[in-house]
Structure formats: C-alpha cells, structure tokens
Length: 150
Image (spheres, rainbow, N blue to C red):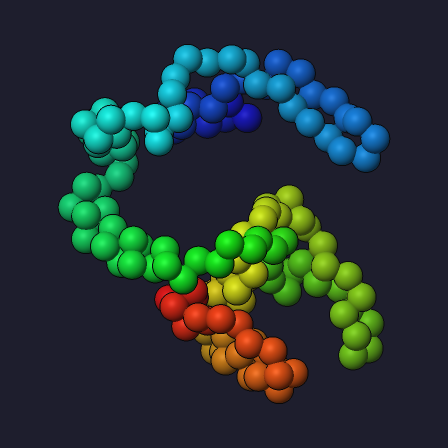
C-alpha cells in the first residue's frame, strides 16, 4: 500500500509483517519518526497541516467554528458504524434483509453517520427522514439527531 500511495505524497509506512491470530488479521508497519498531531504546538500544527499539504487554511478557518460548536452534541457512547453502507453491502431474500456485508471500513462512532452517508449518496431516497420516522414510530429517541447529522 505504501508503494501505491507514495506517488501521491501520502506518507504511509511500509508493512513489514502480516499475520493472523485466530480469526483476526493484523499488520505491523515500519517504525517512522514523528509526533501525533495533538502533541504539536499551534505553530507546528499549522505548518504541518497547511503549508505542506493540500488542506486550505482559509476553508478550515471558515468551518472550524461550526465543527467546534457541534462537539457538544457528540455522544460519549460509541456504536459500530458500517461507514461505507450502501445497497451493494446488503443481501436480501424476499422482504427480509439477510446479511450486511463489506465491513472493511467499520469503526466505532456515532451510528447516524451511516444514514447520513446513504442520504448523501442517494438524496432522492430520503433516508434521514425514514430513519427519524422509524425511530419515532418505535418510541426511541436519538438525542440531538438534527445537530449530529448536520
């Protein structure tokens, strides 16, 4: 993977070993120097994030207040997200869903993300409205739903 991404200037360390443990797969990457971004001073962060990458500082500065305002609506609990959900990831038989496939992008996060992803890809299907209606009909509440999907 690192060789494929190198021409794009995406720094991905080389994989030095792959293996399995039970039914889990793993990869060990070559050790590289560096600090996590949250360990950097504000000046170092700005230099690394904007001066040497494709990120546009003006755009980032425009959307940062909106992102920061939304933090208060992020729930503490995490759920399993599919994170790449679509019709190609679902098997059905007659009127029943029989399997959800392709979990390679799965992660812990905020479950309405999957509905937002579907809605972005197929807005004519109004998945977010259907999701909200379903939760309302089952008398379950998704706290701060509108703010979490905005």
